[in-house]
Image (cartoon, rainbow, N blue to C red):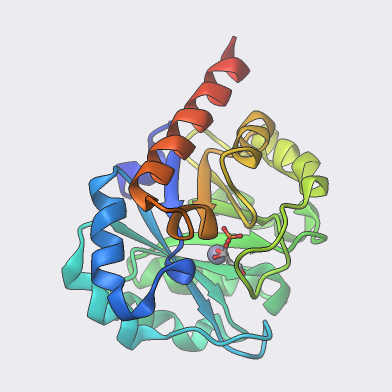
Length: 230
Ligand code: DX5
Ligand code: ZN
């Protein structure tokens, strides 16, 4: 598995959801140059969430533009059906929502067999107990700090105890990602609670300088991380 997932440290994952889709290649180049670690791809199917974004063709189109790791967040009802096309298009890791299945083990095994990293996502009110059986076998757990579907929503601090609970449970080679309303202020609280992988859409691509926004997020996150260690 990629050392980006297994080695400790802060990872910044800009979400292209807030970028200008007409100039996606340029937007990606800017955050890659600024030192982003992962590119967060928000896939929405209009069923699991009330919004539609993009599918494998867009992933395939941007794959040659960048070396960034494709952190693919599947907000879709049927991950078993669509996992393979996303991996073939160039996704490096697929994160599915636990709320869509009664058989999370099946989804984990399927994604793993395709050769991609495996993440599982929890909506704001979904408890850790819902992923108990697969927790040791995923590369990443994603905690939603907004209700999925749209960028630009306010951070929900009530998910922080769940982040802290997961921090206690996960091994150092598993990542703890948080997604929704992460900006230069909220990032510190998320990291102090235990998050190591920070998704940011509007705080990056809505900023006057997306490159500087990536640098600021990393600086603040690393600062909060060091405080946590002292
Ligand atoms: C929301 C998506 C997020 C979104 C975050 O459903 O999963 O990744 O892009 O956007 P911001 O950072 O603007 O809250
Ligand atoms: Zn996302």
